[in-house]
Length: 132
Image (cartoon, rainbow, N blue to C red; front, side, top):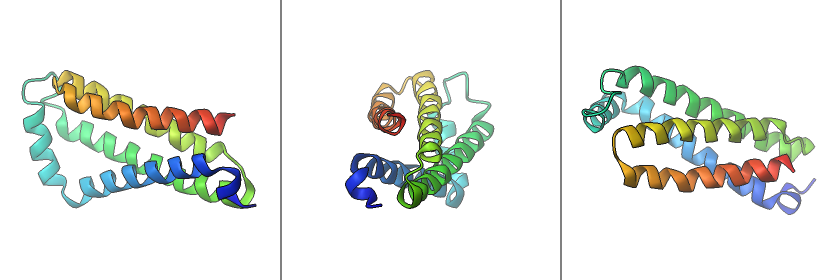
């Protein structure tokens, strides 16, 4: 039952994504108005300009659910070596990253989109490891 010996890459990827998504969700909750202001300006010339609060709310919920699933999944991996919940959390994080990528591309923020690709690759690799 030594999860770090049996699943070191999976656990490290889960921890990385947990920190990423929980911190991002917490930041949105703590500074909702600041995030709305920044993102509204970011999307001022995109088709998403009138939907920023609703879309940010959707991303917030997805980030927090993905983070929670990965926390539960990491605990399950440790206690029973069950991978299903962790895999579901990582898959949801990858879908959330795709949504963020769509937004970055529509805003023509290609550098931001490129940054998301790194997170996406980590999530896909985690899904691959947990699915094998």
